Length: 255
Image (tube, rainbow, N blue to C red; front, side, top):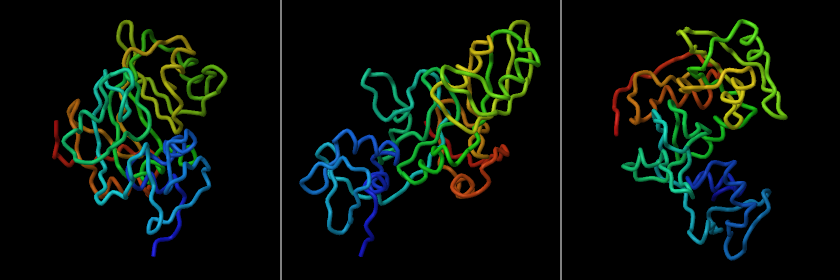
């Protein structure tokens, strides 16, 4: 006999959305339990006796869970669907027969490491602010930041009504008119790094995420994907949340 569970957790377990996104689906009136539309987040369901529907389609728990690492190219939006008709990251993993969705943000013009899954609990662990999961980026900016600029980024800057949390920021290398910064965040506001760099006068020219929670992108080619190893899954789900740049070297890459 199944134990009652929160509706948003059940939706996530069915692979329809992350737990946080499931809350938005409930609040928007798109979820029905049996014959009744439910908009209360505290609602609990019994999977043995209740039938849950999203936009009229019944939701059933996923039988197989997927944990995918993708090297996202620029020009793809990190959502399952886009109302404006732009290319989405799920198109790059279309040969997987499951409803996958991206874990967290990586904006349209950015590239690099992005996880996709149909496991709502996995997505929740990596995206909930209380988890403080470290995410490392290689960022090319216009201009050469001085040490005082780096100090400001490390301490936190105002990005429009919000002061960012302290971050790890290092000047990796400089060219004649550009510089590369290595930036590690433990939060994930919308376009945060771009706004941080603009706030100190150095617009971002290129942004690439290279690791999350100690799992590194490594040499996975742009636009390709692979399954996370069991060791990587364990590290992300319950191991060290600090970014140690560990890299599972499994080479089963896909287009």
